[in-house]
Amino acid sequence: MSLVLLPSLTPAQTSYASFPELQLPTGANTNMSSHYVADVNSDGNPDMIMGAARAGQVVLALGDGHGGFRHDPQLKMPPPEWKSNLFPNYTSVATGDIDGDGDLDLAIGTVYSSGPTWSGYPDRIFLGDGKGNFFDGTKGRLPQNKDTTSEVQFIDIDRDGDLDLLCAG
Image 1 (cartoon, helix red, strand yellow):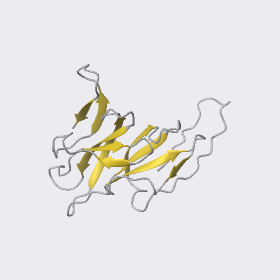
Image 2 (cartoon, one colour):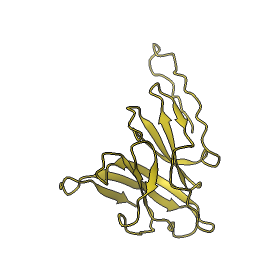
Image 3 (spheres, helix red, strand yellow):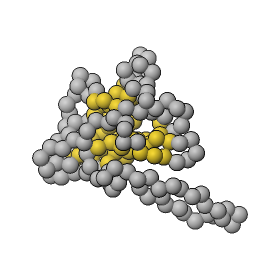
Image 4 (tube, helix red, strand yellow):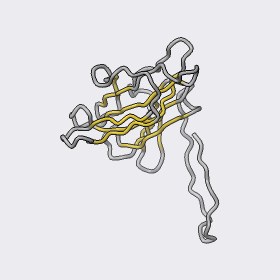
């Protein structure tokens, strides 16, 4: 994870905040390709969900309410996904309550970055329990489309009161 500080345009602005370092699990601390901020464990603090490109996993960092984040290895996330020599890139993350239980769930846009077709992995749905744990809920909720998805977003596009998933490739 990198932080880029750009110079201030006004001379009165000379101080910078200090940001604590967040240690991510082995293999997930490089090539973060997507992130989303939402309160996934219902404690009122913003948490960060990150898709690790070429690591095939989603990493969750819990917010401490003071601007810091910590990775909790005890939280359950679906295991990394690998197929032969294909490496999935999680290109987009979105949150919404898609199963109506009051807890945030995740949609993950996926592509793998090797080969001529840029396909091979379907998008994913992870169902949340409101405590920061997620379980694979893809089956029966998404078609097994294995084309590139660059962006996912929840929206009630047909105004029927439930969330729909918009996937752009």
